[in-house]
Amino acid sequence: MSRPAKKSWPSWLASIVILTILALVSAPFAWYVYACRDTTPRGPLIGSSNWPEPIRDLHAAMVNSGIDVEPFEVYLIQGRPGDTISTVICRMPASVPAFEFLKAKLGMQTLPADKKDYAGFVKREITRFAPPDWSTFAEENAEYLASRGILEGDEGDLYLVAHDPAHDRLFLHYYFNF
View (cartoon, one colour):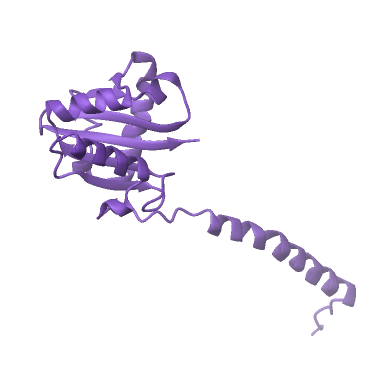
């Protein structure tokens, strides 16, 4: 019976060096993947202090104008509660005063054909991250209005409004583009 060949000292040293190099290379990559994970606490935001500032301001302006938008509900899709650089969807009862206020305040117009891709992006995002009752963006008969920022391709606060005639609700998608 023969004895197994004994590995020499240089081959063990080479194995240790290779494993050390692999650890040094993979550890920062693993940390990067961990640090970039999505930690959004998705769901309804209770209390206006948790809403993005532009949504708080818009709601306050509607209330100050005498428009009844209760219940005004906000659902966090991306970001952190209370952070302006967030994506949220707001849900409120549909009314002519609320609809006209949003059109005037946000410079909203009917979504043109060349901007339908933006509505498609919003539909996919909401379908992926929010419960079905938080969106009418998948409804074919919904009426869409886009803010100046979307229409002009600007950065900053972007709003897309969908009117759900079946349930008589307005949905407002807010996204901060920088």
